[in-house]
Image 1: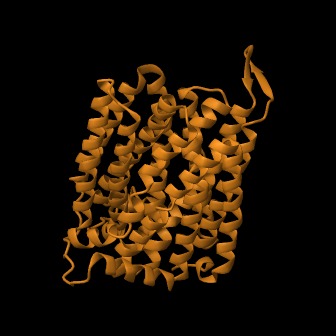
Image 2 (image 1 turned 60 degrees about the horizontal axis):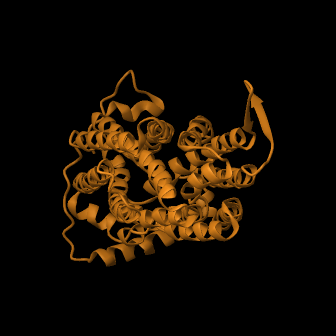
Length: 426
């Protein structure tokens, strides 16, 4: 573990910031998330413009997430063997090259739907490796006793990127077009990549055993099924990624076809979730000393799903309001409010998801436990295909309503069935 020098400026939740390596990792992570949110917004809009198909928009999201079903088996063992910093640099270097190629195709006006599909596969693959290593590296830098504080700080900066990413991409798209958007996110990604070189992690000792990556992952799955705290986190992650989070894929459809708005308004809707997450972090900092992490994780997940259920049908309301002589559909400001409320639940999900696993897993099983989390996240592509097909058949509001209502029931059922998940972790 690298040294954290006591500082009069960084106390309480801010204590991890006294560690220079953690600060550099946090800055890199913030820029990394910023680029990801920007790309998701602009790709969703471009694909909708190219194909006019809700299913095609969802299928791009599927291609981004599908690799997680495979990489989840090897992300943890690879970090064990090569070292977390090396995995971060390798995966982000590849994603940077892919972004550069897509940016060049857009500048040359040669981009096609197929290009987005292929790029999404590469971006999803590199994301899974980088995300696993970035999260597993945190206890190495600041110790397990400060892991939740570190995750709170990352949640705060991630929420900044969740607001600035969609908003800036919508603004850039409306003013400079896709070209300006992609050049900007390429520069941001490059800065994130360079900053990783400043992170000095503890010396990595490669694993010397001869156990295959597959066997190591199987051992990891057996380990997490015997630990109710980790198991509950994984099962709720599956439910949320399969049923709730696919709403992101349909956000361009809701914006253009349901709410009758443009790319700038798409950016506003995308940023609303991040705005709500700031309120959620404030509440989370108060509640985490009174309630178990499992309960906070459960309530946050159920709240987000419920708010998105209301968003699905609230977006169809025919009412309108008049502002400065202009008629604005009431459904649009209502949608912003509901997405802000959904973001409060999202913050609890994002912070506690990894915190529970990092704290409950032993040091030698940490990478493998995080690898199983990637597998759980990897159920998302199936949910994206399902919601895309449902949207084609019954419309986006009903598709999202069906999935989020099921998510509320399943999340609460999982928490009720696992007392070890609801218990406090020390």
